[in-house]
Image (cartoon, rainbow, N blue to C red):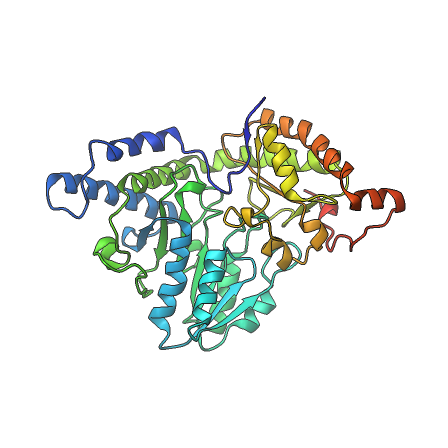
Amino acid sequence: MKNVYLDNQSCTRPDERVVEAMLPFIGESYGNPQSIHSWGAAAKEAIDGARAKTASFLNAAPREIIFTSCGSEANNLAVKGAAAAYEGTGKHIVVSAIEHFSVLHAARRLAKSGFDITVVGVDKFGTVMFEELERAVRPDTILVSIQHANTEVGTIQPVKKLREIVRAKNSKTIFHTDAVASAGMIPVNIKDMGVDMLTLAASQFHGPKGAAALYVSKNVRLIPQIDGGAQEEGRRGGTENVAAIVGMGKACEIASAEMNSYCRQIAALRNTLVEGVLSKIPHVYLNGHPHERLPGNANFSVEFIEGEGMLLFLDQKGIAASSGSACTSKALKLSHVLDAMKTDVAIAQGSLLFSLSKYNTADDIAYVLAELPAIVERLRAMSPTYAHFIKTGERMKAGPGTDYGHHDH
């Protein structure tokens, strides 16, 4: 049985060069970077080097990088830290309906302490609606947080345009973007995007789990959310995970040099997968924007069956996939992203996400296209809704709310 890993939106395989860079700091170079002896100095030097590489990756300055343990922590620091720093000038925050839960739940927590939260909607492709964002921004809006790309459906937001809309309404509003899904897959340049804060995580572009970063412009104030130490210039307390930070720096260095070439390869494989699935299996819909999407993202809704069943059968064939966000997939609830896109509920339950990386091959895609049709056919044979459709030609529930399947891919 072939093993095919297509769950790269949850985490990626670490590059061998990343692992090699980390090994000394797991073993003999174990000093605490806050110590003043030579062991500590070696660790601090390694972190400084990783900070410089991460900053260069974003076109930022090293002192604008705060290392965190994960993207969720960085998002919480951005949203809650900015809210605490600027609540004296306003208590209004704007987020999109398809943000990662680390942004949405952070905003919900702030709402319980007196902040006013506005959630802006998206269209059927998952793109934030310009007019709704413009209406949402007010004189007391201190923060807008809109992701660069969505982990589930792959839609890339026009962040630069969104930032211009916000700035035209309120030039003092801080703009944060969650780039966890996009960093390492498409160019992420804070100067071009014009953002004030940006989140990225090493595990999404062949670095280690346990290392992420928040870019914070030198002009932005932030209140720490973890107190107790002088680390990260007092902005995030806690002993540094030196090995993971070093690995993140190396992953940034590799992505800077190689991303353009491997992403063309990934996009070509993704297109083959999308075209194959839509041509081989009837009643399947592509979720997300048909063109403005991440190169490795192929998110489908397979009608008449549920995503969980497909995942289990795919796993039996050695194929790893997912059915939504890695942080919510085990909840077996309707995707809040597809819900915000107004996807028909019955169809959204059949969500299936394949996310590719530079380690995937044409043979991997061919194997999936050989195995998936039979899995869908087997599950539909057990589906009463499919039996009803075959017998009557009518759906037991409302049909597709969108025309995803009719777009050129």
